[in-house]
Image (cartoon, rainbow, N blue to C red; front, side):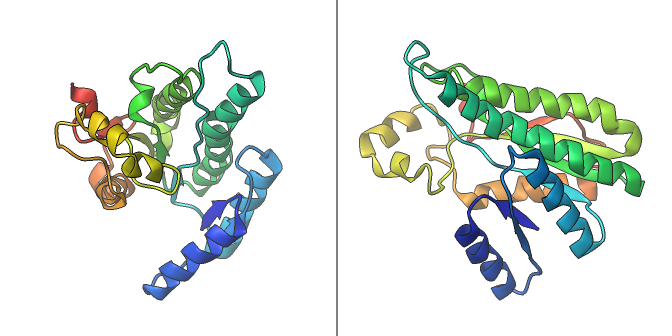
Length: 218
């Protein structure tokens, strides 16, 4: 079950998955709206009979010096990155606990959740909060056999970050911090998601896995 705010993006994604022989459905919703989240979760349970894996990946950034940043921009970043993650964990957690068969929860944090950066006074703290939410829920839901872990990527190619790849000066400067000599591609993310979704990670919870080409190792 795919969910996002934008209908056209969801339709395209589901069409692609089905075209590859997979099963997929979608439910439009705003992760910051609690009623939307509850509706999406109910739609998922009604469609598939339950929920075994949750992946939260919604995220935005508003880059600006703190003294110039509006309170509204700061709140928007915190709402999407933290509140949206919290609400989906809250509602899906209810389902997983009631099912009594455990589950896998994968939160998408960021390398910036470990490190400070000028003009990231909303984004970096928000991703640090996501990391600590994974640790907290790992402790809270361990008795229910629900694994909660987070992935902390560096810059990956997406529609929102394509400009970083296209701006040659920015790209070359950023690569100085990446021991593996390149930024991330979507394919680099998949293996960690599969691992954390599978039985191979059954004894892992509260972990933050850096998928960053060595960015946080420097």
